[in-house]
Image (cartoon, rainbow, N blue to C red; front, side, top):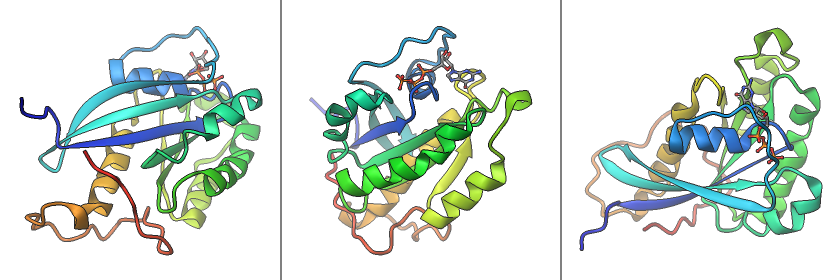
Amino acid sequence: MAKAYDHLFKLLLIGDSGVGKTCLIIRFAEDNFNNTYISTIGIDFKIRTVDIEGKKIKLQVWDTAGQERFKTITTAYYRGAMGIILVYDITDEKSFENIQNWMKSIKENASAGVERLLLGNKCDMEAKRKVQKEQANKLAREHGIRFFETSAKSSMNVDEAFSSLARDILLKSGGRRSGNSNKPPSTDLKTCDKKTTTKCSLG
Ligand SMILES: Nc1nc2c(ncn2[C@@H]2O[C@H](COP(=O)(O)OP(=O)(O)OP(=O)(O)O)[C@@H](O)[C@H]2O)c(=O)[nH]1
């Protein structure tokens, strides 16, 4: 039987407890949202296949528990991820400050060359905003990664964020494809870590 997809990309969401990681995944995979908060225990995943650059990309999106007590379990999953999404809550300054620690955790536990993406979630709660967009833009620039403000509640930028990460992984691994792509490398590929070469295993 023919494969239902061209590539399988494993993505991982990390960030403080309560920032909305589970909700972002549910919005992306099932187009649903629930206000009830049930903290993730350990790790879980959902799947959605998207079309990017004419390729069917199956995204296996892993959800990690933000609570410190699950750290040993969750960091064990970093290594298999081709893309890691760092999430903070725009209404919670501490969750933004902690992004530096999550970055450190990626450095210590993930594969070299993993694609990263920064998300400021709950942007529907403008009245309670504590983290300015410019602060996050600056942080993202410092790390050479892309940044989006999202809302799992309103669905703002959710598809765009996941697709953008998938596209970056696809482009970065372009050299390992069949070679029939006539697309030049994107000039705004800010997510490439210049020091490392990617080791994505596709399919
Ligand atoms: N207003 C608003 N609320 C949100 C949004 N995303 C999530 N929430 C709420 O924030 C709470 C926490 O969401 P979760 O997705 O469970 O958070 P989490 O990051 O997975 O938390 P852990 O599993 O503990 O790591 C829930 O009450 C959600 O309804 C959003 O975009 N806007």
